[in-house]
Image (cartoon, rainbow, N blue to C red):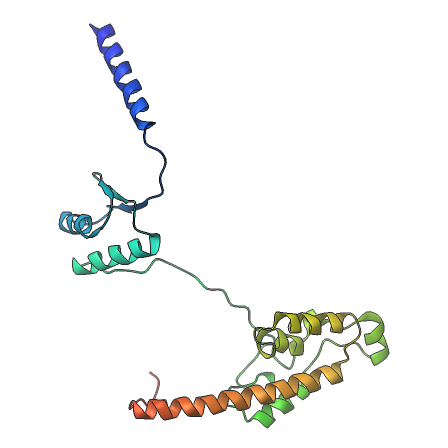
Length: 223
């Protein structure tokens, strides 16, 4: 009767739980069949190399890493009429302060340095830049500079120090500790900027020669 059925169901559930515990946990990559056609899902099953398990709505692969799995799924999707969209992503930017203390603007040449600026122009713009210094050298030594409010320090942090974090940190600490005065700091930054622009423009010229050999014109109109 009903009691026998309940006992059978209970024993079946217990047996399934026991069987489930026999398989150790193992890393796997899962392919979900959300909107795929039957043809595409079958093709994906065939395309997955190595050990795998196929279920009604997903496939578990035990040998494929995540990057390889994403590439394979996109390839199969494209082969079967899908779009192969890349997963959503985002990037975050922090805008640098303009050299004049406000926003950079193409209509205010002194507020920014262009990669096409003459190196001497770049040097002069840094020399004329606003700083986070105090009213006098005496107060600068006493209170330290305000590097967090200084466009010149931002040049060090984001460009002039390149990958030398220790150098950028040293500039910051010398400034806020009162050891570094704005005049000397701008002299150093201006010289580094002049060197950077000269080097960049030399490399640009070399790249243009290569592109000319490939029949690529950098001066075509943008639409």
